Length: 132
Image 1 (cartoon, helix red, strand yellow):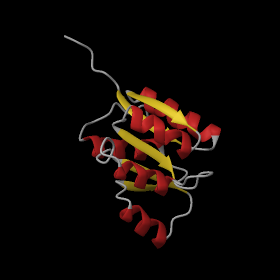
Image 2 (spheres, rainbow, N blue to C red):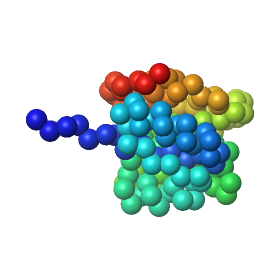
Image 3 (tube, helix red, strand yellow):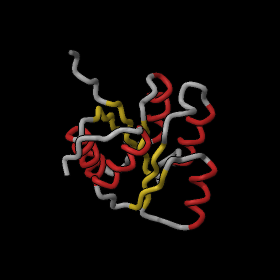
């Protein structure tokens, strides 16, 4: 029997402490996270080696999480990759924009790791090993 390969998750977050926290949680929950501090760096990584899910902050320097989601949707290699947005600024406009770029969900920051894990489970159609 072969061991299951951890699910690749791309995490885009410009706050280093927050990124580290998400990375640690996802690794302990059985995922294979790759973390980057901005969407401009994330896009070529995702296009070169599409992850199973992208988790992205909405407010990022340069390219926003919405712009990243739109770029992923526009490319044949990544158009079906679920994108989960994270934001501290919840408004009806954020919800509308997330729907426009076909984000799977928007989670409010600070995001409780178990909520992120549950959303990943939903997007992947599986159960993850929760560390929390």
